Image 1 (cartoon, rainbow, N blue to C red):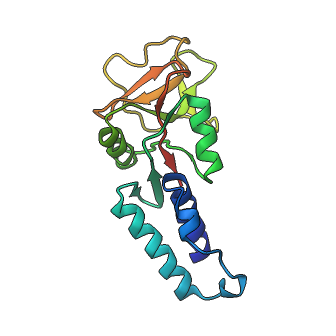
Image 2: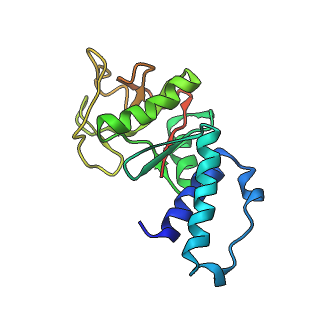
Amino acid sequence: MQPAQLFHKILGVAFFVLPWCAQAVPPLDYNEMGDVVQLEHRVSKLEGVLHLEKMITTSGDKVFAANGEKADFDTAVKKCKEAGGAIASPRNPKENNAILYFVKKFNTYAYLGMKESLIPSKFQFLDGTPLTYTNWHSNEPSGKGEEACVEMYTDGTWNDKVCRKSRLVVCQF
């Protein structure tokens, strides 16, 4: 990943989880954009603050963030998009565990970035791609067309759920 892309990814995370970061980070002088060393230093500082505040966790190239806020599914999707990310969508056990960190930290269920397809009990990512990794709780999904969203339980397993409930917002960047 290019340093400028990494900086913007970390900055989006910072603005989502710590709104006061917008005031703490002075605007970039575009003449400095070529100064990779300074840019990497700033990214490192932001990342350090977020790790210290336990507001981010990583898995592979993905950064996951949560600030304890809850929302219904559509609002969660919107909040993550506004922050420059997407609602968390685990594609493997490590990513599932990264999201589980926040579910346990805030001791509440979280929505995941997947929904039921037109075929009842068949779920897919929001972009329409099929799930290649799942972690359904025993006897789930069970909504049979009545529960279109997916939440993560505090043990890391998944449950299909109606989309209007208030759940933890976890974003990925």
